[in-house]
Amino acid sequence: MVSREKWASVLLRGECPVRHPELDSPIGGIESPRTAGAHFNPVGPKNNMPLRIQLIATAVAVLVIAGCGKQQAPPQMPPPEVGVIVVRAKPVPLVREASARLAPTRASDVRARVPGVLQKRLYKEGSMVKEGQLLMLIDPAPYRAALAVANANLEQAQAAATNAKVTATRNRELAKQSLVSRKDLDDSEALERSSAAAVSAATAQVQTARINLSYANVIAPISGRASQLRVLEGALVGQGEATLLTTIEQVDPIYVYFDQPVSDFEKLQRGQASGRIAISEGHKAEVRVIRADGTEYPQVGTLDFSDSSVNPTTGAVAFRGVVPNPDHQLLPGMYVNVHLTAGVLNNGFEVPQLAVQRDGQGAFVLAVGADGMVAAKRVDVVSSVGVNWVIDNGLDDGDQVIVSGLQMARPGMKVVPKAVEEPAAPGSKPAVPGAGG
Image 1 (cartoon, helix red, strand yellow):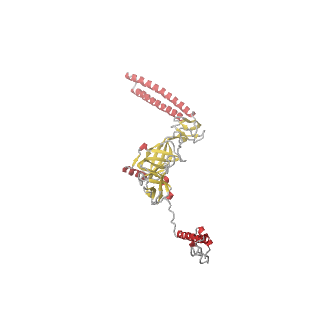
Image 2 (cartoon, helix red, strand yellow):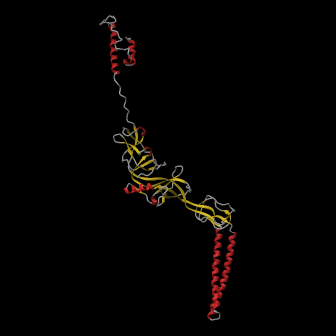
Image 3 (cartoon, rainbow, N blue to C red):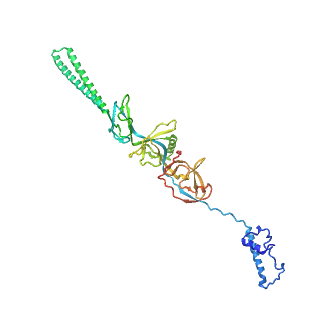
C-alpha cells in the first residue's frame, strides 16, 4: 500500500490518480484504525483526528477522480476583424494609358539658299528665336556686286527703250504725212517693243540679284528653339545643294503621338450603344502627360487628331494630342506616358487597387454580406483613377468590399466588418489595364 504522504503529495500537485498505477484505490493506502490494531474511542477527540483526516482525503480524492474523467472542449476562435469600404455607383472617368512620343508642332530646316562663305553666326545655339530674326550671315559682297551690275543693265535697257519709243512716235507722225516708208515705221515700232522687253528682263535681273543678296542674311522662318549650327563658321556652303545650317522647332504647344488598341474602341462603342458609357468627342477628350519620374505635367492638353485607319502591323489606331508648353519643359523626342480621358462610365465603382485580386479566371473582390459571411465577386476592371480601379460589372451599390485583413478572409467564412477610410486617389500614378467590354 501507498503511504498517506505519497497520496497527499499526488493530491497537492493536482494530478489525476490514474497516472499512478501504484495507487490502486484512493483509500487503499490508508489503513483503518481497526485493521491496524488501534483502539477506537468514539468520544475522545484526540483519537478521532486521523479518521477525520482520512474522510476528508477520501472526499477530495473522489472529487479529483471525477474531475479528471471529464474532457475539456477546445476554445472557439472569434471571427476575424476585417476592414471594409462601402462602394457606391457614380459617374467615373474612363482613362486610357499609353506610351507616347513628343514632337514639335512645327519644324523648319534652315538651309543656305545661295552659295558663299558662312561669315558669322548671330544666334545662341539651343535658344528660342523669333520669326524673321537674323541667324547667320553669308558673305554678301559678291551679291552686292551682282546687284550693282543688274541695276546698270536696267538703266541701259531703260535708255535704249526711251530712244526707241521716241523714234517710233516720230515715225508714226511722219507716216501720217507719208514722209516715211511703211518699212521704217514697222522697224521703229519693233525696236520700241524689243527695248521694252529688254527693260523687263533687266528689271527681273535686278530683282534676282536683290533676292540673292537678301539670302546672304539667313533669317528664322518660324519662331521656336534653334538647334546647334551644323557647319563651322567660315565654311563654304550652298555648293550644289542647299546646305543644312540649323533646325528650328516650335514646341509651344507641343504634339504628343500615341497609339491605342482598336479593341478598346470596339468596347467603348459597345458601351456607348448600351448607354453605360458616354464617349468624349474631339477636343473634349483630355490628354495628360506623365513624365518619366512619374509626376504629372501641370498643363492639360486635348485630343487633336485620330487616324481613320488601323495599323495592320500593330492593330492600333494612331492619335495625336496638343499640350501647352509655355515653359518649354517638354522637349521634342521625349518619351512619356499619357492619360487619355476617353469618356465617362455612367455607373461605375471605384475600388482600391489592393482590394482587387486575380486568379486564373480573372479579377475578383471579397465582399461581406449582411450576415457577415464573405463572398467572392467577379468584376470587370476597365480603367483607373488615382490608386483606385474602376469597376464596370460585378458589384452592387452598397457592397462592403474588404480592403484590409484579406489574408484572414476566405469565401464562406464569417468575419466582423469594420469601416475604414478609403485611400486618397490624387497624387499617385495609376496603372491602367486593358478596357473591359
